[in-house]
Image (cartoon, rainbow, N blue to C red; front, side, top):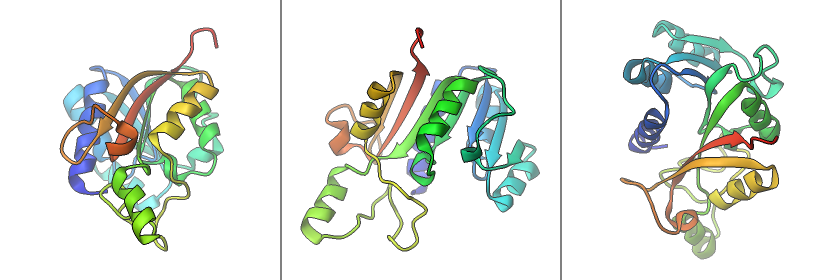
Amino acid sequence: MKDYAMKQDHQIIAQIISPGAHVLDLGCGNGELLSLLRREKNALVQGIELSEDQMHQCVEHGLTVLQGDIESGLIDYPDQSFDYVILNQIMQEIKEADFVISESLRVGKRVIVGFPNFAHIKARLTLLLHGKTPINEALPYYWFETPNIRFLTIRDFTDYCHKKNINIEQAYYLGRAKQVHILPNLLALNAVFVITKHPHK
């Protein structure tokens, strides 16, 4: 994803996180978001990252990050042990998405999910007019080099939450330079959701 889009979703997530919160970032990459939350919100941050190189970058910046595969579960973490669990720009890259979301909702009081919206109008037009896999700000890879194994949309995710009885507390839809407030499934490049378990679940 382009730098500006990444900064935009990081800014949204930083707004969501309450000061001093205990945060776990799954698939935290080089730790840019964790560093922001520690600096701006005085958050107690931890991360899990599969890439050894990126995990070492996090450690070099003084972050507590474990190397591991989030798809193997979060068995070492007790229920509700974090205020927030973050799944940002990782859902489209994991195989066991339902399991990872379920585990995140178990260990986190709230879960923040961010992903590129494959139903954006430019993506639709590229498929319709050119018959080719879309490449845009949110989906910048060619088909043969993309880390993405699924292409979900805003509607896919909201339907999933409804089916699984997951509560959507907040939703943010991001365009190239600002938030999108109308027809998000068509006009938003990225989405950020805050989800929780329903109280009776």
